[in-house]
Image 1 (cartoon, rainbow, N blue to C red):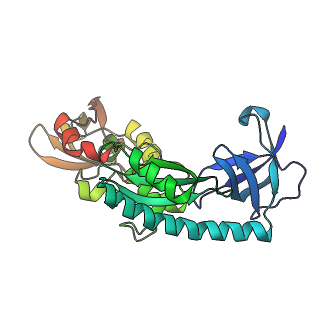
Image 2 (image 1 turned 30 degrees about the horizontal axis):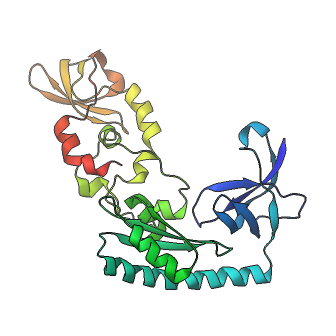
Image 3 (image 1 turned 135 degrees about the vertical axis):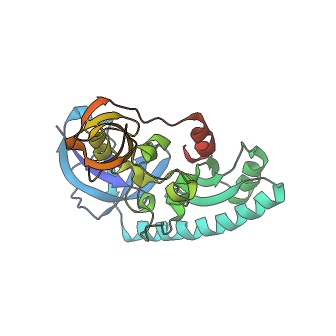
Length: 285
C-alpha cells in the first residue's frame, strides 16, 4: 500500500496521484508539484489515503510544497499573462491567415511554457506562428489542436436540459457514444435532437445505456415474431420502459400487450443501416 493524494489542475479534469511526502495536506489545499510539462499548482481533491501499489503508476512524484501566498500571487499573475497571450495570439493568427480558432491559453506555474489550444477543420501548418509567439513571449510555445468536445468542456455553457454542460461540470473524461445507443434507446435520429452544442452526440446518452441494454435482453425488438393470446403477429412498436408492445396480428388487427404476455417465436435485431450512418456520421467522434 502507498499513501497518495489526488490533484486536479483544471476545474473538471483528470485526477493525478502524488505522494504527500510526509507533509500535512488536506482536501481543498493548493499544492505545488512537478508534472510532465513542468512545475504546476493544483487543487487537492482527494485527501491522503492508501492505495494498492498495483493501482498506481510508478514512480510517484512527491508534493514539493503546499502553496504559499507568494505562489498564489504567481498563479494570479499567470492568469493575466494568459489573457494577454490570448489576444496577441489571435492577432498573430489573423496576420498569418491561418484557418484555426483559438480556444484557450495556459501558462505553466514556473512560466516555462505557454500552451495554446485551438480547433481547426484540417491540419494547420503553424510553424511560423510558433516562431512569432516565441519571439514575443521568449518562452517555450506549444500549440495543441483539440476536438469540439474539448472546446465545449473548456468554454462551458448551458445544454438543452437547462443545466450547465456535463463535460464542464463533472465529466473527467469523455466516454464513447454511438448512433446505435440512440437507436436502442428509441430516440429520434434527428441530429438536432441527439446532439449537444458541440455538434456531437450528447454525452448523456451513455448514462442510461446499461439499463436499456438490460431491458433489451428481456424485451422483443421491433420486427420480432411473437405469439399473443389473440394469435401470432409482428411487433411494430416497443416501449422499453413500460414493457408495452404494439403487435400487428396476422389478421391485420393491432393490439397492445405486455411483454410478459407474449411468447417470442423469432426475435429481431436493432441495427443502424448505412443510410442512417452516412446521414449522422459527423455526430460520432
